Image 1 (cartoon, rainbow, N blue to C red):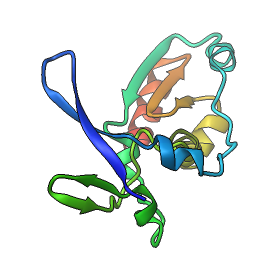
Image 2: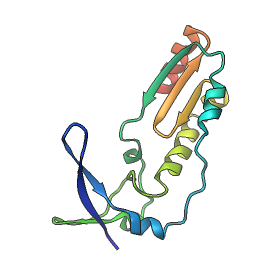
Image 3: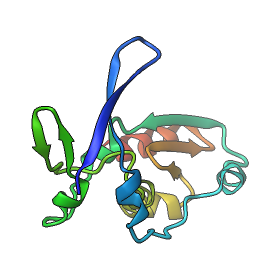
Amino acid sequence: MASPVFFVKKKDGKLQFVQDYHKLNEFTVKNRYLLPLASDIINQLKGAKYFTKLNVCWGYNNVWIKEGDEWKAAFVTNQGLFEPQVMFFRLMNSPATFQALMNSIFADLIAQGKVAVYLDDILIYSTNLEEHHRTTHEVLK
């Protein structure tokens, strides 16, 4: 079963390649990993004075599909059949998988109350500038 593709026009007028994974998602077992609540993140920020927001560009496309499962995300174009090697945005479990990965990578900083992560957005927050610089440097490593 290969998913169809199409193009949508972005705000800047450029075309964006989109895979239609509706059929695949119907048969996918949902990953129940919870995304953080905005209210919980806001509560964590109390007392912070310094903030830096980072975005992981093309975040989902940095996560490899499990070897042997590539065929499930196959898509067809007029150029042939393709099996992606990395996760795409419209796969049902992409958000939960990516959130779990980000939480794992930043587990220590999250536990220390220095970083909040929501999907591909990383928020660094602190009460003093020196600590903020250290944490920002650690996140960027």
